[in-house]
Structures are given as structure tokens and as C-alpha cells.
Length: 467
Ligand code: SAH
Image (cartoon, rainbow, N blue to C red; front, side, top):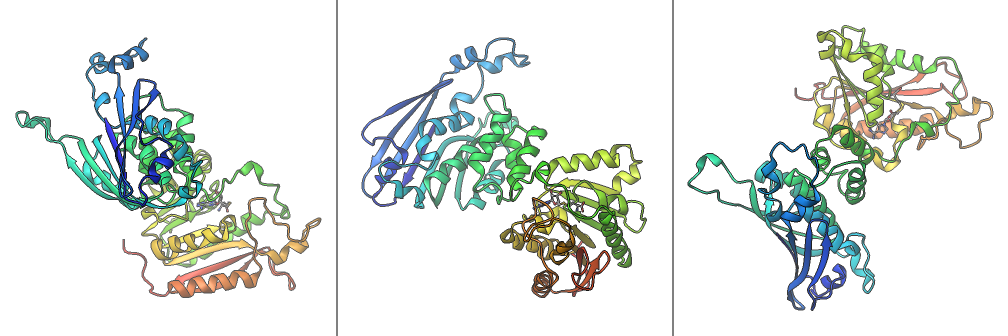
């Protein structure tokens, strides 16, 4: 199994510094299950090609995995494609042979690490479940040009169908570290198999190697699921961390300093009333948390379909539990859907709603991420009505023992005054063709205003997103 990496960056020999492998020596790296050979097939100032050749020992593999296996296809141990294709073995080889480069280090020429270079990669045999479409979906969002040639199956056996093996050529101008991290994760994703048990350690590898590019990748869920061998628990755990702006740990949240009157209930009641005033039938509760608003919405017949979304997998599990979804009659079950997702990435599942609600959510996002949320909600999902609530910072002086600049929750990234909220809301409305009005949430103090504030946006185009 062969992987070649070619660059025409000048001087092309820089590649050998980055790979931390001497151009004149062939080197061997031992792996569990085989040996990886690293050598160069071409080293000039104009062009340099490094090759990683994997020599997997099929017999050794079987020995290593011997013992009670529970494998119902006993021959699979001897008759399989593993020695001949790029798979998670290749990822293991990349990680071991090129660990310095993968970690973004270069002792002799550290300045090279961040330099994007033109790369031309060939993978001699790559099994791709899902074929060229999957290759495109995985690699093109990362900027690759892809040439894939499907291997021919034996024409004598047409019933074997199409081969899932491809010779793949990838071209891109990126840093070597990016390139290696993409290959490391996406090769086994193409293959959709792993030669070892997938557990917690794999989640960490995925987060570590994918942190700079996976959150924004449109196929991030697909990649995560396949990488973690479709284990839902692990995949959700990884997605939650990947897609969170910053880890939001409910445990870290300090006790709310809001007065103990049931202010939150009042907020939710008000939001529900506002929704009832519109003719909205399909409602999305974005950042639904533990589902308090959903409880208010469910009894209202006007709301034919209700979606709850939160970035926190745990919250979604809590909602399911609290609302006892699986014990609802089927008709009710069809009315409500709970999904995990991040408001900072475009999500088709958010399209086609009459109204979207974000109750005390925006202040949990770092200001630079807020513009991503604006796009997701107002440009892509674009429901007719959007209701957003957020604390009113002016009211904080009324809390006892409240220090200047302190916020109501440890996880709040900002708390706005009424005019700050209006400045933001007016900008968002103008940019996206909505009209906005503001209302206090809670009893209004003449000086400070109310505890929380609410903006109600109505689309000027009047029509909801195409169904
Ligand atoms: N709306 C709920 C919860 C508010 S707390 C209520 O009123 O009770 C804020 C919620 O926003 C948390 O559940 C948090 O997980 C969620 N959240 C924070 N950032 C998010 C993001 N980028 N995408 C989706 N949800 C997010």
C-alpha cells in the first residue's frame, strides 16, 4: 500500500525538513501489524516526492488478534483486503512516521510549518464506501481537487457489482500539517472500518486532529460517525465538543443571582404568548436547554410541529427524559423533535419553520460567533418570526452583592444594555430584511428597565422559507 506526497514548493527539498526524514535514506517505522517504509522517489529543487509504503503482515495480524474472536467469518482473518489498501493502518503509519510534522514542529526550519505548499497526493488503493460522491463530499470542502479512478472488477463476474477501490489523486495548497491531519482522519472515513477497537481514545484523536477544520466541515457529522465506527454515544460526545464554541459545562455555571421569583417562567410565558399572537404553526426552539419552553408550547394546539435544538447532547437527553417523549402517544411524538446541533453552522434541519425562538441563548456565544448565528438564523433558516431574549445588563445593579461588570452566569460572554441590544437587533433586522420591536421581560423599573429584554423580528418579505 503506497501513499506519495509531492510538492513543487521551492525549494522542494523543504519537504524533507518538514517530514523530518532524510532524503537520502530509506527508513523503516515499526507498526503493530506491519512495517512502514519512508523514502523519496524524487528530490530536486523543483519537485520532491516522499513515499510511505505500508507493508502489512497478514499472518502477524491474525496472530495479534487471536483468541476468542466471535468473528462469524473465520476466513476473513486470512482473506481480506487489509494488507493491500489504505485504511486505518495508513493513518497509524502517518501518525507514527510523520509525528513531528503532524504536531506542527520542524526543528531546523520552524518557519516552514505555517507555509501553505502545493501538494499532489496519490493513494494507490483507497476503499471508498459510497464511491466518488463520498470522496467529493469529504475532500472538496477542504479545497482539494480530486481525481479518482475506480478499479475494474473482473468482467467475468458482473454480479460482483462496482469495485469500491479507487486510485485517488488529491491536489491542494495547504500546510503539511493540515494535509496530514486531513488524510489521517479521512482515509479511515472513506474505508469505513477500523482495524482496532474504537473507544474513548478515538474521540480524543478525532478532536485533536480535526479541531481546526472539522467543526466547519459540512460533512462533520458523517465524518464523526464513520470515524467512530458509527457508535452513537461516542459520536455525539465528539460532536458536542467539536461544535461548541467553547466547552459549556453546566457544572461550572454559578448559581443564578436572579431573584427567586419565577422570572424564567415569566419569560417563557411571555414568549409563548407572543408566539400565539402570530399564526406560527411550526416552531423551532433553538438552544432549548432542558426544554422548559417546550413544556409551555406542547399543550398549545396552534403549534403543529415543535423542534428543540441544543448543542449539548446531555441537555437533549434530559429533555427526552423529562418530557417522557417515548411514552407519548404516536401523534404527539410526531409533533415534537429533538436534535443536537450548533447554531453557528448552517443546518438544513432548521429550514421551513414559521417561528424560531432563542431564549437566553445569544449571550452564551462569543461575539465573533454571533455573526455566524445571525447567518444561520436570519439568512438560512429565515423563519417569518424570530424571538430573541437576553438579560438586560442595566438591571444588574439591583442585585445584592453584585460587583461591577459581574455577569449573571459564569458562562455568559456578554450582557447587553437595552441600547446595546437594540443596536445589534436593528443591524440584524436591516441586513436581513426584518422589522424588529423590543419588549421588556419582567416588571419595568423606570431607571434600569426590566430584568430581561426581548426582540421580536418579523420578516419583511412576509413569506416563510420555502417549504
Ligand atoms: N433556552 C433555554 C436554555 C438557555 S441556556 C432556557 O431558556 O431554559 C443556553 C443554552 O444554549 C444552553 O442549553 C446551551 O447548551 C445552548 N447553546 C449555547 N451555544 C449554543 C450553540 N452555538 N448552538 C446551540 N445551542 C447553544
